[in-house]
Length: 148
Image 1 (tube, one colour):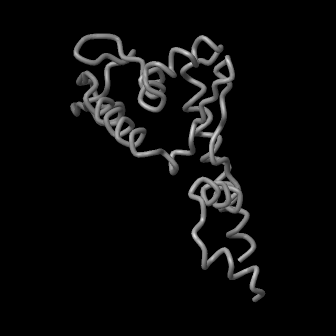
Image 2 (cartoon, rainbow, N blue to C red; image 1 turned 90 degrees about the horizontal axis):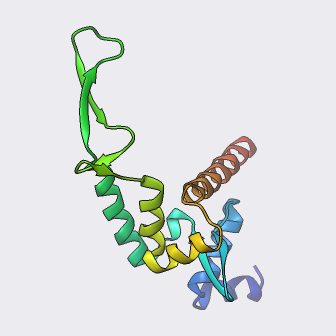
């Protein structure tokens, strides 16, 4: 091992660079940058890289998703049994609830979300980008497991 190899291990690493290196090594995006106009950028982080505030708001969003209005319906396969499911289209306390929009607000905050929409963004693309990141990681995992 050369002294260059040990230098990175022995010295503090910039957290942003470390995230990017980990994402690069594992073969997925660390985030997706969005141009909000007027020189302002916002980056959708990989779910593993949410900052503290984003993580808190995301957990609140997840709790909201669990609290959506429910309905009882017949079980699709078992006669006489019923199951509870979310009302669709989604409602919360009897009011319309858009999970894609609420996810955006949780991750961006209200002000950045308004700029995102003004720049041409749509709520559904955030979850789609997260699914792409997850698929990249799954594909990399498959490739790595075949090489072992």
